Image (tube, rainbow, N blue to C red):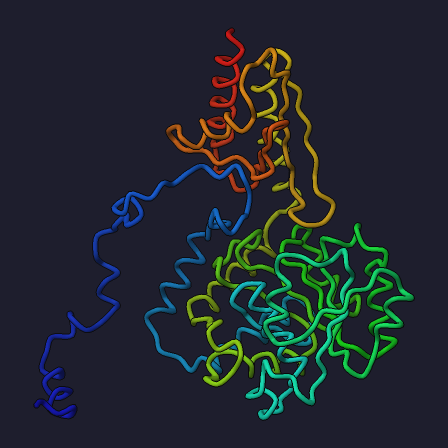
Length: 398
């Protein structure tokens, strides 16, 4: 049996070409997605996880590739990246997480345990620990499972009076879903004030809430103790990455509850060196963009599709911008289905099955065809416009 030391010695006599990952950079490009036969498409839907969200810029990919050529101490890198992000966004502390959902889990865990190693090892068993999170009933959503994974129990409230009654010695945290501000009776300023009044850490999930760029600093300065943003949406960083911002002591505690610490609740929510570096570079690039020009370009793209669609009889269009999350132009196209004899769902199906394949927004239903234009590449709005006009014109018998 070959021992470890002789094997390593034998490796030393081999050529470096077969061992160094740097050599692979010169290899011919492969389109693995094409090899696998997986459909690619024009994204007229938006930054949905199922549709792989946004695309990373070449500069981001280059930074990630360079990082892949080096070994580093991951804790040291997280220290440095977190410090840099905190400086850029003017907050006490920051860390790169495994998406916004990973931030919810790690951040909540940090609030529950602090730096107490015994409590870190105990999660999700909250025996002897605070165990409740106050949330507005209208703010319950498809991601609060990431918070409940820590073992906490959600306590639902609707009014400020409910909030006051819900506070107890078991209350660990308050959770606010930023996009639901318009639906809740306790508005954002009052929610923060109530949390501060009772000295309860508050967490704002603002995952999809840039643009506008001002939101990066708005919520921590407002008084939220923790805030999370998705990295793979408007920022165009790695889709599997996110940002957790806020109080440094809570950020430090959150980090102890995740990788590289092996016996921690969020150990599996690992962030590698490439994602950390890529997230930082993507954020730096996002902060330098001309956001006014970008918004003007989105409006132009929407108008190209509107102009084409309205050439078909009975077609009407509406462009709106959601007030909080995904704050970019959303286009709805409607028509008289007695005149244009096809349903929006069938149009979406034909767009998907055509070449190139086009994905419409998930909001498409039996009454309207919907598009979001901000993930389109240059010139793709013309392709979408032409295809929509062709399908509708044919259905109208024109």
